[in-house]
Length: 325
Image 1: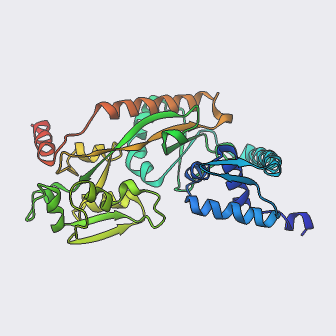
Image 2: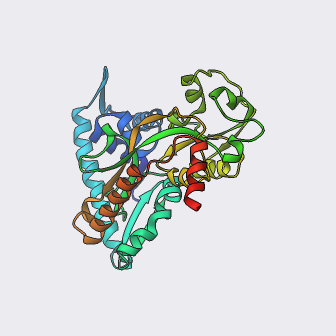
Image 3: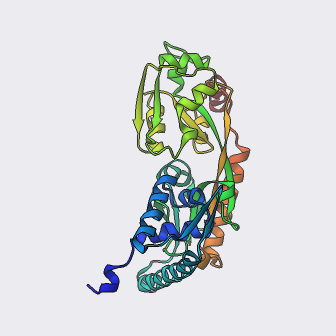
């Protein structure tokens, strides 16, 4: 192997450095790359150690590139862009026409896929490819046309289209809510199994039952049991199956509430500071099929905001009964 190639830093380190230098924030860069802030900081430190020079000035509540860091950042950005362009050209003729959408596994499963038939009815000539992966993709360097990401407003790119925010509330199968141990108040959760999203890195504290219980007057409450799942759609599948109570995310599970598969036993809920944003790859921004899909996404999101599901499990069952008459 050529000596120069052997001395190249890790590509992951370079991607992390590029994002941190562009955002001038380890926290925002970590959110963008879907890694923890501590993991990104370790990557940057390892890169600095490998190069033998500091790349950032770490000030109180501020981050700045050193002179060497700024020069290296320009070169890194240009090199990554060149590789991305070359990769696009290499793929070129082998790529099938169509819109490629990147999003998380759970959002694809619970919200996008159930609605795709609506887009196909409106635009039967446009092929759609859903790339569901919980790893972040770089829209400037891949073959993805649109990404739907769950971000704080401060981390959303300038031209991102906000689809909707998110509301959190406990949900369960109606037969659990009205069963042998009815769910009338948060204290009643002590008699039920709680369904958790496994989050060892602490990336989704808003989906942590401990936080919800503490904010609802039940700090330190011990539930009857717990089940943990790697993906959020698995949490919801378990809740629909009557295996316990989950922290629901509306509008991701709005259809489940509307059709009665799930119900919300408590009126109290809280809104997340984050939201879902559609981001278009710069190279795809002028394409008609991409524009059509983006407009459809916005329309579906607006409809989801109008179709607010019922507030409680009891009302959910009454609405469903009335609709079947």
